[in-house]
Length: 545
Image 1 (cartoon, one colour):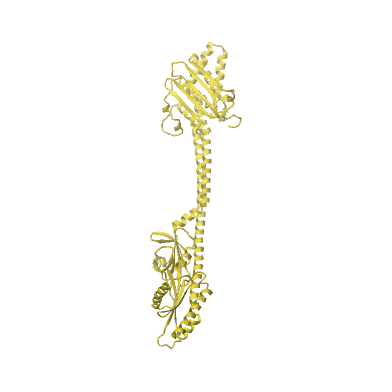
Image 2 (tube, one colour):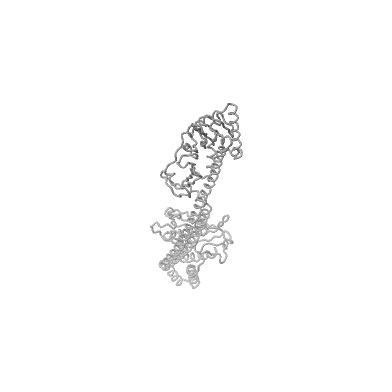
């Protein structure tokens, strides 16, 4: 019988385990697929954000460069400069006439700045016009030191005279954070044997460029560059880069779109490189690790939901497992009960006692013993599936057992069952939770002792708890040899039957009512044992088990 029940328990255990594993596998697969899909979707959205932000920045820079260049060309189309292109000696006149013509040039420059919004948008700091090495005129849009204008524009003029190009844009440097847009003008109508040249210098504060590129979507760790087509850096959010050449590896990246995985100095980047116009690139680099972290952060709600579902799953599985353990422990307790009640030694002594009583007395004692034995054995039959019963019913089992043992031991055994209040009889108690402890008290506490034995069952209440004491004056035992907290752990050590029963009872109570409830044992060798059962007070109702 025991082997069949064990096999049945093992089958149920395997079934429960399979269900748990299937649920966990299904949940894991669903979670992985959902997380993977959400991650890729959010990752693509981040790339789109970068792409849109880069495009917006390019639009702003493109409009600004177009306005600066348009202003430069507009100045070159002024009446004074057109007159000069017809006559290179236009400014080689008497002093008074020269001053008037230079003043006219200055007025034309100011009107051009105003009409092109260069003044209002702070795109242009100042404009200077040179005839060869001679500074003819200048105007500025913000307070500027005249000496600074003369000095810096003269230096720029020397550089552009060395160039064969008619229009160049000089990058800012750490020493001079100004971008210079220049235009070289020569006349084909001059009769002068020595041709002269006009040079227009338009100065733009590099902070404007830096602020423009920083308007791009501001991910932490992003690196941004504004370069010309040869890789010279005009603006950047990285210090000490102005006027320097950008890495050829980055410049070799084709313009357009986003390169999502690019290795720079053993670090992975997403790179967006776009042409602003025929002169400039805008380059945006963002570490892959930063994109991954941003993508994961955007999944916080999904992660919270996943964690919540996982906790719910764990809770449900734990509850199923607890209920299953309770059922198995109940079955084990019933098996142990039947084994203990039906062991040959017990039956032999009881039947021998009945035989002797039948010879020595009338039918009444024999009838009572047979009735007690029948009722006690009936308590352990398997058709009764209740896990909890009233205290009054459990005490009947205790009474049946003690009356049988009293008939056997006669004067060597006495017992008392005391109840603080009759109301306690209506409370619920786990089925077969008191009787096995009473049996332990008699069989393992008194049978091996020569002195008269006494067993007490005391029921009382304290606050919201029901307290039950099973006391004996038997031989006692070493409490340290019985670690109740080790219940359920397979140590490989075979415990005595009585200890298994006590530990299983303790475990059942904790599973049913929580860790604060269970057994408390006080035992002293050769003095006796006191086992306390503590469970919450709960009125027993038919069907509540």
